[in-house]
Image (cartoon, rainbow, N blue to C red; front, side, top):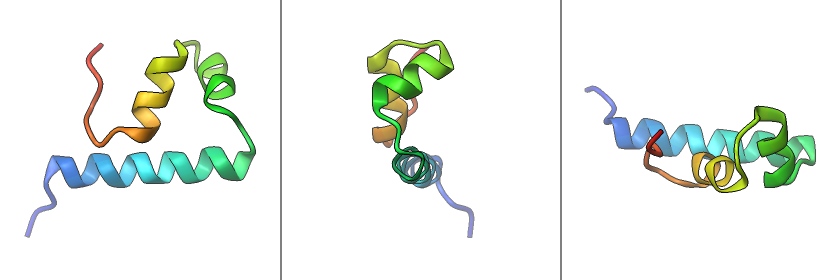
Length: 53
C-alpha cells in the first residue's frame, strides 16, 4: 500500500524538527542558513502541508 503525500510530509517535518533540535539550532538559525525567512523555515519544519512558494 502506498503512503499518502500528507503522511510523507508529516514524517519529513518530524525528521527536520528532530534534526534541528539535535543540532541545537533555532528556527531563525535554520532560516538564516537556508537563506529564507523565519516564517518559511518554521512552516517547513512544523507543518504537515507543503508551503506555497
